[in-house]
Image (cartoon, rainbow, N blue to C red):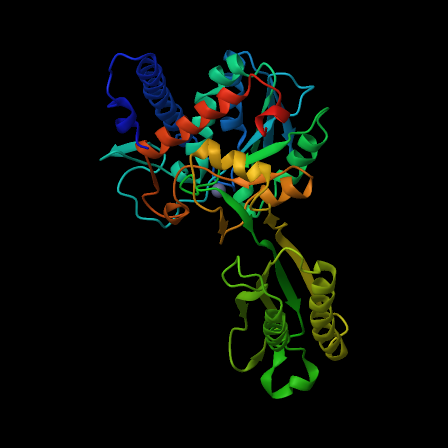
Length: 418
Ligand SMILES: [Zn+2]
């Protein structure tokens, strides 16, 4: 439903019409508030490589003006932080709203307007992070005053992370704190852009970089050298064979329906007549829920160990260093679960819940025992690109979702499912 459609609802005489009109007026003013907040949020160039403390301070100050105190959960060197705040009774089961504050870089992208200045053209609001996912963040913040009024029995937990775009690196600490709350949330909504469709599942993922060190030399004397590129190639072939062997285990909810293994880059060597002493490669696995991760990791370790052993046999100083780039679990919230049905009702989504091709922080919340769905405004297809945008109508629809949510907070969570 677009906000224009809401505002244009007929203003006839019955009390129901008046209620509709009041809700429409509320939503329209809230939309303006949301867009102003989004403009402020977009103006922070919170690329994952930078500190997110400026945008965190902005959100803290905003919440403080609304009488809400937030807790920072900093990273190891204090350059970044997640925020956790509770609105309403902390001793009751409530609902977590999850967003990340970081965005992907703009370098090398050809934008029509400044990516850090929210710019409206034809009802589309352009700016880095507008869809992914400062749009949802702005909607949630806009509705904080309403949540504050409404949350007499069911609290709202605001859970804002950093480094999501680097592979959900910031969320584990935050999720740990959320799970350790006096009463952990009974539901979590991760507002990644799904066009407000309810998404109940996605694969897990881990990604690693291998830095191979061999021994350089003249190509005429390969017997005195250790070829790092050949070792990387052997690992690449081994991972390919492993990946194909995993396709027997399938889950048709996903495309592709199996756990995939993928080598994304392999760099090494400078000249034909030199044995390369160094190679760097990166690979990832996208895992179905239920995949035996220990067994998969053991098979990968074996492939790497065999290549390392061959290198070391040639040159004792050789080695392979493994760096984890990202690691997050999958999500598989049951289709008919009360949590799924509640979020569908909030979003006004009557279709069957979908599965996502991309990963989110939702798997971390689910693994902590919190029923979790992904549902937010905007389109992942516009994310990470030049001229990322979100529609005013999409923010309006997300606002309607927040109004419905607020409507439940005056009673205990257990009765919301009833
Ligand atoms: Zn995102």
